[in-house]
Length: 320
Image 1 (tube, helix red, strand yellow):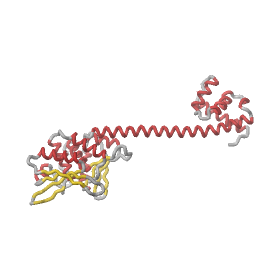
Image 2 (spheres, helix red, strand yellow; image 1 turned 180 degrees about the vertical axis):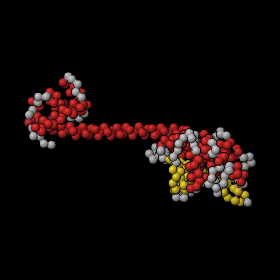
Image 3 (tube, helix red, strand yellow; image 1 turned 90 degrees about the vertical axis):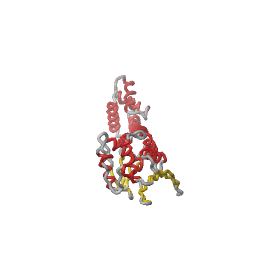
Image 4 (cartoon, one colour; image 1 turned 30 degrees about the vertical axis):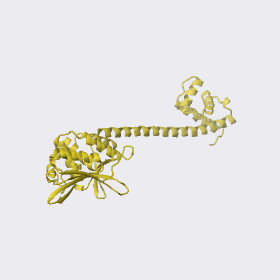
């Protein structure tokens, strides 16, 4: 059982609240999925016993309550085990004695990787079934992490493929889950943020979906802001670099001809303005020059005038 990260824990605890008051057929689909991927069968006194476990107390209590509500007189026990290893995790465990009737009621065959049609015959049943799978073996990276990832880990490759076929039956949403092998498990997963958001919404983890979207939106805004800042820094560096070259040319012209002796009024005043405003952009210079010459001067005009300054410097034998 994977250690549950905090966001996965939030999702699962929300699901235990979202799925409290549902129809019996949806409850069967949800519990069947949970038991199918979580349950362990053992035999004692010719009876079939079932063990379920989770690291999330609220999840196991949700399963426990639903089983108690559905089966009168069920011989069910709840306890926990604390690991004494370095990571002191607590496992919450349900043990059901003589569970053959329960396994039969949920249409579970641990040796068959097919999913009974009755459990996923409608989209709301598919939703319930996927919710059960996620409650047991699902996880989702915290949206603060830029590596978006939601997954459900399964023991059987054939069963994982059967789940993918069930997911393809969903008409209201489109999910492109992929399948990989990770050690002894087979993991179905999605990494696209919009699909993760849609999946959380689909299984009724609406608060988690909202949190995911808000964090994602904040990051996207931050990324755009950073890109703009980077662009501004690049543009500023470019302005300074060009300005230094232009001032060097203007100083050469002033020394060898004299700025006051330039005939072209716009060129003359642009030389003066560039030395006065070394950090000004072409847009800034166009505004200032327009004021001086009392007529509209565009950015493209500024570019053209600097070419004239360059030509004048070269006629005076200026070398870069």
